[in-house]
Image 1 (spheres, rainbow, N blue to C red):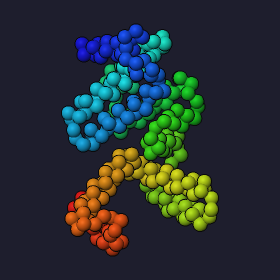
Image 2 (image 1 turned 90 degrees about the horizontal axis):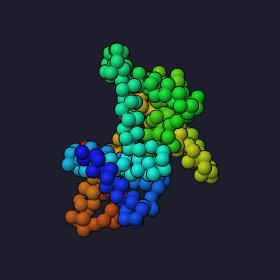
Image 3 (image 1 turned 135 degrees about the vertical axis):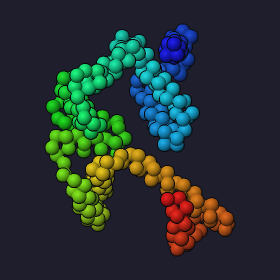
Image 4 (image 1 turned 120 degrees about the horizontal axis):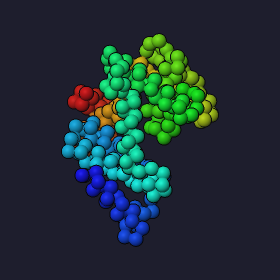
Length: 259
């Protein structure tokens, strides 16, 4: 089987006598950044609609799972088979409407049931009594903010609709303006963080993923700016030499060309 070949390759790479020197030097901490990078590359291939690239990136991500599992096996902690067994058991446990007698009416009800199962599992594992106790610190900031807001909402701490976080954005903008009038960089940063957190909450109420929204906005900005640069280059200019009025006109043209 293909997965057995991957695990054999992983074992060879970690062989103390004949393995790869780089692979032998790695541990969980040194590999973790590569794992995150591969997950982002999977997301990037999906955003670009590149299925050939997605196949390759999924393989790279799977290799990361094999690597971590090998490190754990060497310590006698768990094996790749244990990882697979754990996710299989979890999926069956969290889908009683598929593998048992429970009834789920729609996707929304399934999402709520899924969160209940996760909460019960957290309590069973003793991961703190708080609703936010196990939201990972290492998540991207926007993703973590969304999860924190969603968990707090499940616990009953939330606005009834999107008008709440929308008003909160105005409040936080005013506080940011007041902080900007002072000379305390720490307070200014704190107010900017509160503003961003409020924007994330608005996105959550609108059913939007802030991480994806910002990634798409960044991509649009990059493409529009490249359009502006090409327009200026055709005139023998660079952005630094253009007037503000000229930049405004070219940026408006770029937005019309790249909506």
